[in-house]
Length: 322
Image (cartoon, rainbow, N blue to C red; front, side, top):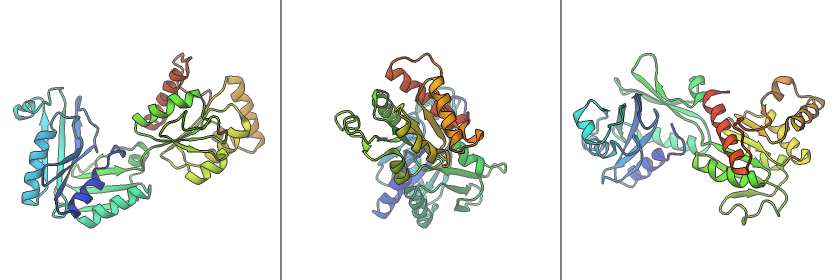
């Protein structure tokens, strides 16, 4: 699922406030469905909604079905497609088909399971929510589903009955070097669903005037990344060109599970970087994790274009494991 969504948290809040809540989850898609499997919408008993299962195409119909489900206390499987007259009437005319599973909180989805799910998300602990849509069995687990966690991919198991919703921690981006490229990259990354922060001990660079509203850390990069941690949902981008700043953070990154490591610099600069890492005892396989020169080769020249190339490469690595 898109873990920037806060549907589980909102569902728990509305349920505990006595408003009632039903979680609607996209469990299957075909064709040009507008949202990926795992996307969620939460609906209150008063008709409030948060999140999305179709980018606006069928939300109105899902809200009505969810409110009915809250009345009955039973989960319901919905299907919308372009060939369905009712679906066409609510706007799904893009040629896709989606199935949406609606679970009333309390009667179908137990409050304690939802509470534990929300706690795991808050602790940045990857967790899978399993539900058998035939038997109604539900549980949370952090075991198994290795490929699903790695690819952030929810979906049905081979039995076609057990749906697995992957709840990975939100994506983060650690940018070392508050340079012009960072000024373009940080807002782009936020739009793409990342929680970015900028690390630079040079106060003239890492100022709120240059990065309004962003999280700035004025520690040395190795100290900063140790404070925030580098996990499998974190990308590290090094933009300073200065080995004194980049290398200590790079050493920590190569010993971490962060999914992306990118370093700015020419081919010659990267060759010198590789030599330093070899002298520091890093193996070739570790060093090969670094994307340097950073970004996809799209002919970028301006800071903004380089930022686009970096974010594109991050997306490629995240989704394809390139």
